[in-house]
Length: 178
Image 1 (cartoon, rainbow, N blue to C red):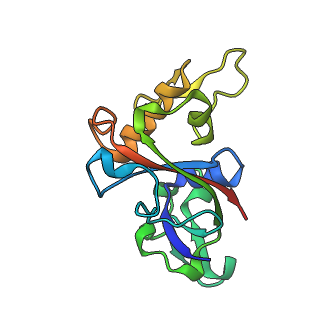
Image 2: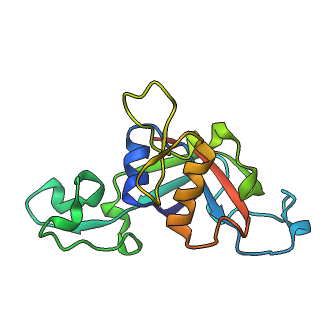
């Protein structure tokens, strides 16, 4: 069994911790030609295979005396207003990680092929108490009736301007929280 790190934003860590996020999409960096992306023994996901573990890297801090010294930005309503000196997720050591995921399925697809069901599994937020299905618009702060539009704004926020329009090939990694 392989164990690899994977980065998640604070909002996605929250979605994982409440069971709302069970899937993630990551851009396939190489090979770039679509003919090479047919799943086979030659196409290996850099995150692992079914059964392998991913340990979550998230924004964190070390403060002696609480939680074995570790604090996590995802646990704060507004971490930027605290006096805590946050460290970027990329610098989180394995011993500070509190979430381990088990890969249950991996597939390859174009980003814009995401189904409405899969957008929900990506952890997008719902508007509480609404009689309509409303989903968070991550760019404008409002809500949208379409889950795909919500995921599109989340993708844009994480991956940058025009990243949705490029419609890259992505690894679709399905996981359970162990």
